[in-house]
Image (spheres, rainbow, N blue to C red):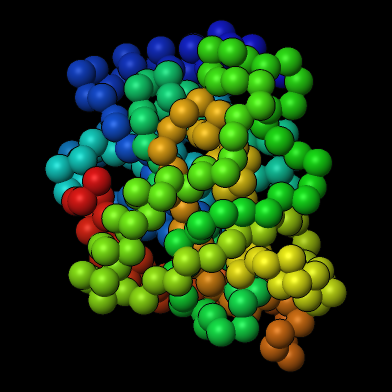
Length: 273
Ligand code: HPA
């Protein structure tokens, strides 16, 4: 279990760096989506490696730094890159940044990821608003003694993805003309992509997208009382749907190809938040 003091020391370092800038919304950018961070006005850049106790991201398409600043009048903390369990981190380590942001006073989180489309009506490039998730693996950032300073022992997950924010996101999508489906994200630990049989099972269970991130951060954010919005970008059809192998290149290329739509949607959401 990570000592509470580590979170405090990371937060203290950032407070010092940020002066009187107080972030209100945390945005975590998934594979291929990191470019959105370049839009931040008057950015204060803080590489994860500089922050005491902070974990580095080693995944492709993840820069590994915070961009603090303003977007559409909102004060944001953008994480360009996150850490994943397949890099060898624990779920608690994967959620570390969320808790540090909580200590900085952040109350809302927008979390994004690249994912494989499980729903056969989706196509690569589809953005999905996450309504709920499925976690069948025995992983959680909350394992071990409960840290009461973050939240309760048994947090309720029934409306983890905040209904009012989801309604706001749908209205924002209509206004900018970005097709947005709402659906269920299913977590797989990776780094191997899923098998076709696993994807068929996911579909039977009610999943619309499959991916290797987001859920640890969402659990930690829910635990400490943040409001949450989550988005998956379908970078590929999940395993076994098309007669072709899955590659990391297609994931990053799709992020690049979809960045205009993705950015338009995120900016309009921030404006309305
Ligand atoms: N599965 C899991 N994670 C992913 C995928 C996928 O098909 N595509 C991008 N991230």
